[in-house]
Length: 143
Length: 143
DNA sequence: TGATATAGTTAGCAAAGCTAATTAAACCGC
DNA sequence: GCGGTTTAATTAGCTTTGCTAACTATATCA
Image 1 (cartoon, chains in turn yellow, green, brown, orange):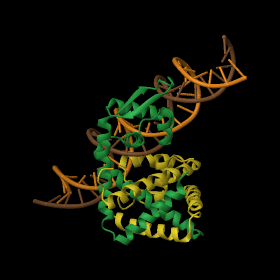
Image 2: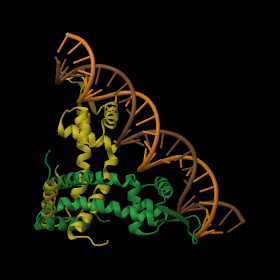
Image 3: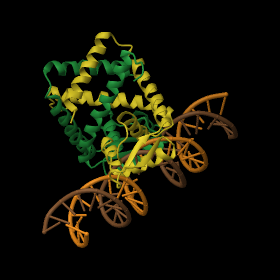
Image 4: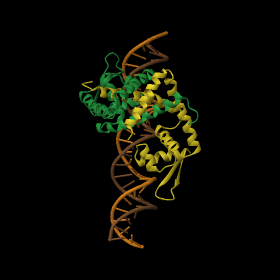
């Protein structure tokens, strides 16, 4: 690649590593029987608690109509529930059901165990490096 | 989260960091005017050189019919070319055009510069940690 | 040569993204 | 407190990207 600074070369490799990592992890999600966008939205609901459609759409970096349809599907599958917001009757309150939370925990466990199985082949020192790198990335990519 | 080992906790945070990183980077790709799967396939062609449809599909972890349609779109946009394989006349040879390579380099540059801008706010030591982490991840996720 | 395997495409479906337009409620200025 | 504007969500309709099943054409092999 023509004339890249060191930082750019690092950025390039970090990007590539993130892509490959997520590709492999995504294979695990097939077992959940829930399409990726739905699983991801459900995850936000389970970990973030009840929220409005706009909030959920923003959290998932998706437009409201897209999220509206995803919530339709989650509701149809009995994994989430829309209720009225009494303070603002234009808005809806979306929350995960018990069943939704249960399904999500299973999927998350599968994914994390898959990754952990790989990471366990590394040395403690290497894992420590990854931990520090994750911290640095979170710091710098936040907002 | 109920009873997670240290390695699992690290896996969880690594997973989350990768998702957030790629989400932000993907925003940059909007500027390429090329849908994500097309951009990604084109990238494989530019960096991996000419290959068959099956090889390209495998590289992108996608089924042949899906890739066939993506290549249709790349051809229609003048970014890739199908030619006959003389040794095996069932197969096609797919390669990026000059225009395809040029577009890809632009997009890649934009993406890498975006990431590099963020990474440049870190210390040398932190970047070194990320570099080591990337190496460890590549080692362990390869294959 | 005839059966089988392989490369690619076509057809048709589902999921997930978008914008534009619509409906209903809330808010605000006077 | 009424009229205009803003905001929350949905509906409609398009595109892209994924899949499987079925088909065509070529290659391979017994």
